[in-house]
Length: 249
Image (cartoon, rainbow, N blue to C red):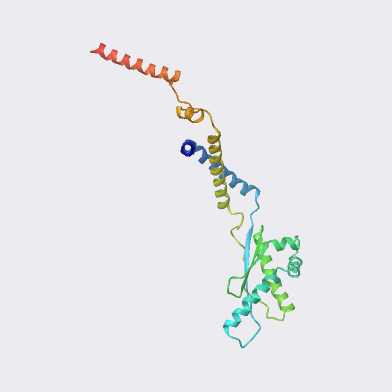
């Protein structure tokens, strides 16, 4: 019984492979079609966004300390400052200073603060549909957060060592990524449909299918009438050619 199940599984896998091979052009065409559709959707319906970044350096207030202790203190402060930079008072001040038409939550969602490992650096990144607005917001945020930290904490305010610039390339959405996702989705979807149709197709096409599905053996094979007529026509043409050759001789 197990041998028969293994044989049926092998036949099914072979039929699926043959079906995929026959529909290869259709599968590729479907993948390319969805890739083009994904590209058009990205261009027409998704708003491009640009990112601008500023860098700040955390300076510990303690003096007469070793370089190792200063690095450790600065690294710990950088984690605290990263939270203060996106705090409500700082973001609301940025909104008021620039006259932005957005809420505190909206601005907070467009700001990311990154502290590279074992460094005293803070990288502030702002994402916005307007490249100039992204630069203005990140520079104002760096300035406002530095002043806020210096006023409310008994520490040296972080120093701005690199201001943001107007970005020239958009950061999202990623066109290449969207196209590749569309292509992969098209290939997987079309291949899955072909596989499913092949597995669910229980029609009898060959003698092996009769033994497989009906568990009976075949006694005779009736040829297709079209094949019989075509083969008969070829034989008649061959006889005519031979007779013509004999007449010429």
